[in-house]
Amino acid sequence: MVRWHYGRGMSVSGTSTDTVSTSSTHASLDLKITVAISTRNRGALIDETLQKLLQLTYPHMEVLIVDQSTDDRTRQTVGEVAAGDPRVQLTPSNTVGLPVGRNLALSGAHGDVIAYTDDDCIVSDNWLEALAREFQDPRVAAVFGRLLPWEGAERTGIETGYKPTLERVVHERPTPPWWVGHGGNMAFRRDVLLAMGGFDPLLGAGCPLRSGEDSDIIHRLLREKKRIVYCPEALAYHKQWKSWVEQTAMERAYGIGVGAQCGKYIRSGDADGYRFLSAWVWQLGVRRMAAGVLKWRNPKVVHLGYCQLIYPWVGIWKSLRHKIDRTKGVYIA
Image (cartoon, rainbow, N blue to C red; front, side, top):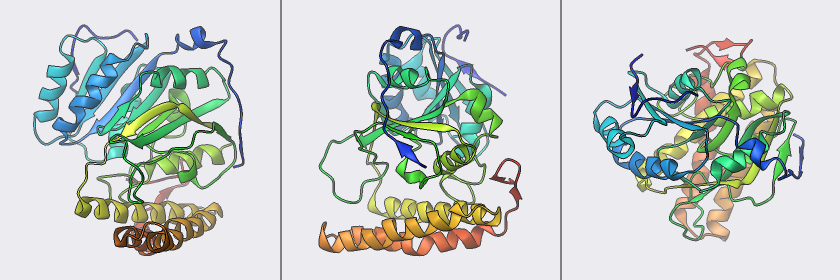
């Protein structure tokens, strides 16, 4: 596998509310963290994302970018922004799919913790410090952070990648995974994620089943009685850059991914699949359509709710052609 180094290289539910001590702040800064981004043909978007990451002052960080692009723009952008910075490593790959790229980053990371963000996200100044503090508790397997619109506008009902909750929550039993967090702001103990088999290779952008590798790993961890923390202090921002046509396509992908996840659970004898499917259709379908009429008075919101009534069933149908590795709990690529 070819890797470009920009410098000399680095040696490196139940739910409940809880509190975390700040007395271990200095100890938490000794934790090595790999920040991972999987990207494809978004050389312009990743520029600002990487600039912000390199402004972070966390002492033990590396940035690993898996580039699945079909052009050179991402490599050129990363080279210009990170020239001479030993913390940055770019791995070109001819693979396709967000979970595939995330799994490649997992296998190539040097950190004790691997923190994932997206090429259209901007992290806050203390993002890594907040994550590191949570991982001082050895029981914590994963941490999800708060995610807000980068543009800072008031809510419209059609936002994507939105997790504004200000209350810290500890999850220890299966719960609808979209309540926990979003893939644009998540971190894992690397050894735990490796032991889980990484992300499902067929769930996610660019893959046959279109989305959901982040929510799927949430459920797989909680099903194995691992602890996941939602930490609002670990703040990142998501750019709302997609056109309406692109957003509706993404919403359809979300529905397909949820259907594929729930279909996998049901076929594997996990009754949570029925519970999650009904909750999704009710909350993101029926209630969203009603909110589009009564609250937002916006036909776009109604249409996005309609997508979540229809496309989970498409996802279930599509998933039937794929076999399941029941040991790891993932589809077989």
